[in-house]
Image (cartoon, rainbow, N blue to C red):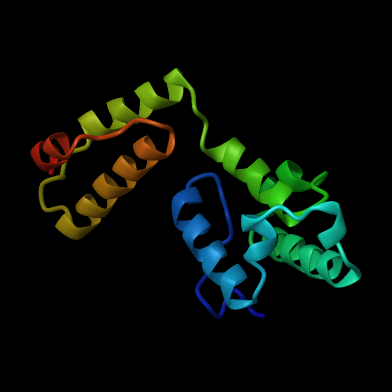
Length: 145
């Protein structure tokens, strides 16, 4: 599969949220998402299962930039690679939460700026904040937008 032709940007330091959605779509399309979403027990690990899990792991590897390969280089399964990437990019720390909230509070539409792009950045920040465990009350969302 030529991922570039599908318009899928490889995982980099600044696109984890969008990448997660696209990568899941690719893995689902290829019939490989189940190797990430469900952990197999010892009896289920047939030769076919191992082959498809390796294919899913390779697919994840193709969907990340070279700099991110170091994060998953020791992963033995696709599920492990996915977890390593998630743990790396979705840090559940107070410092990360505060930094994202500060970034949201400073977000302004530049004069003559593109409103759609601004709203997209706003929604992305909200999603990133929620991904690290903060819940944005609906009232706050409405006030901020």
